[in-house]
Length: 592
Image (cartoon, rainbow, N blue to C red; front, side, top):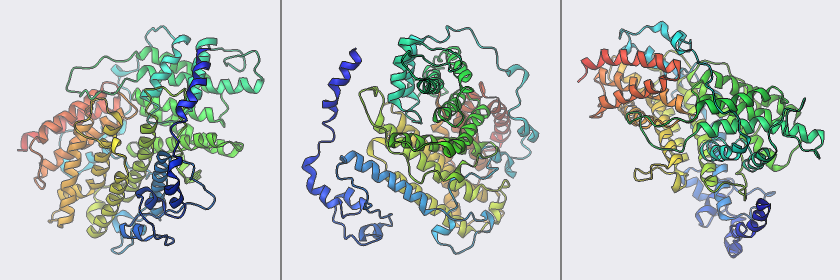
């Protein structure tokens, strides 16, 4: 009853946000101006297809479509739409056939040298390929160990589940709130309003296994309603599992005392209950896609990347079936479909960057050329859930992922890094410069509250992770140049040398960023990044061909500790940590 009363009181308060009727003059101008000039509130010369201002700065000029009327949108919505259109334009500008990395022509337009960004090369192996660098050979590690990184060791076989109190239905709303605050902000693949309503309903009526629906039963519900409730139940339980396992963000490093851990046994109990229900879902339903995706997120939280890949891959494959059978939906369903699509595509690409696994080929669907639009805030949105910040972060993550995918296609399509020695230096520099230009352009569009500042509070999560992502993009982009400087028998051109130096700086900064104890979807990737960046710094220092930061040795030691920290749970990181320590002990003695 109280919830109903609350809802009846809230709309008038929220209705104050879009009251912008005093903006009739700016809105009238915006009808004819391009979106960038409208955002800057400057006069647009209306030249088609590119106005004078956009042409002068090299920006994509977008005019309002004749069938679209944004005049009733508030300023925040207009800003968001502009940013969505901008990142889409960035993606469209780069679609071209993939060139051979080692035989890039000397003369190309920027459009010609940018490969397709929606697929990852088959064998990137981003972190482990550093172990094949000639400068790191004969360092005492067993190269054959790379073939069995994920083989369980006798002492690391997963133990049986500890006893826990199991699923407590009354606690589900609290678990869901933690999920929305700590997890959903990075991958908004469910309707947070429906999730909140379902949590309250389960707390009041309980979970049910009535055959064959296995749903929360309401006497007045029809059969189709019961099927929908079944579809809702697995994502609900997975949200609870993630809510239990997740923690509020804190910048506690691996060098500090270990923080208290979440109740893993309880989280596993909810996860197990959800897994029992997933098999009962229709594989062509949206709820099945959501459940598979959230299973993958949980498996990444528990540092099981192969299990996570199976879940993400299943979601991507099921997306193809879903698109064949789906009925036309309303705008809200369409937006949710887009969010699931982009999250599935992004997550599969991230794992395939590190592990040689087959693609689901979801990128070939070309399901949507548009990024999803923001969800609607409502009285059911938790106060601690940063809806707007989360949405900007999500869009930025997608655009950053596409730039990374282009980098992978441009420089990492071949397993043997020695091909970088044979490539045209001019073509390498030109391609890297264009990719960096796109990266800088995307970052320039970040709102001020997503920009990282050293003076920000310790709990500022989203700006911090975007800050780390910048260094990740840079160290991937410039690593081919570091390899070239280290291994080439002849001096390299100044541009190559400069990019190699920037790889050292980015590897140093990224290694310092990933030292957190905070558990999240990307913890396994942070362990891998620490390994990769630490070895890159070791190789650079050992070569003597680039300038090293004064405290590079301490940075490498911290990267080693980070790899070993997450290696306590991930068997591949444990083995990579041993290799890392062997190389460090061998090389550090010979480097000043």
